[in-house]
Image 1 (cartoon, rainbow, N blue to C red):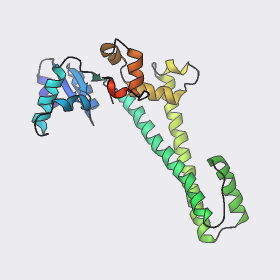
Image 2 (image 1 turned 60 degrees about the vertical axis):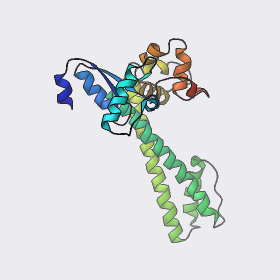
Image 3 (image 1 turned 90 degrees about the horizontal axis):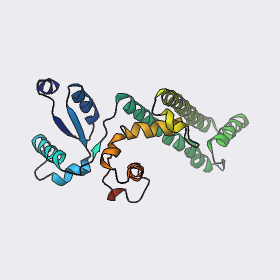
Image 4 (image 1 turned 90 degrees about the vertical axis):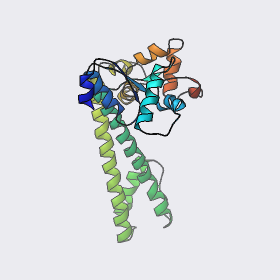
Length: 230
């Protein structure tokens, strides 16, 4: 496909925002084309036939030509890499929460009550192991859960370090860190998710700030605002 577009003169290309769309957008931009990523919710209304490659191309062509269509910002490789790091970290955090909660249910069946919170839980785990109140099998099972919990925390700490390093070197991510209450994790997530903020200036001139907030699903009226989605 890239060889085909390389032979074409510079033109406007419309792509439905989906898996891999940012990669193709970057490659087509390198070839000198103007790429517009269209959120799926704005493409669906123009779907009149069965879903196939030809129909999707026709729909994208029509949608890109309509006035008032809002486009998705093309994200760079660095931005998508940090988004990947945040997604992996989010999964690790969910796993950690599950590992913290599971021993409460398991040990309650043997009359052992544990405190809430992972920090207190670690201390009580240590005391529990030293007291040798568990049978060999129960000791082994809880020990394995404890080991996995420590592993997840190490992974989260490593990702926090990587994300913080990126936020300290990225020129855009440095700006929001200067404000109180915003750290490297929040700043990197905002920058990586927003992509090119100029998209909001192009299509939301009447209320740019509010629509940018709606983009992050922080208002109840996000469905009533035509804003660029992921």
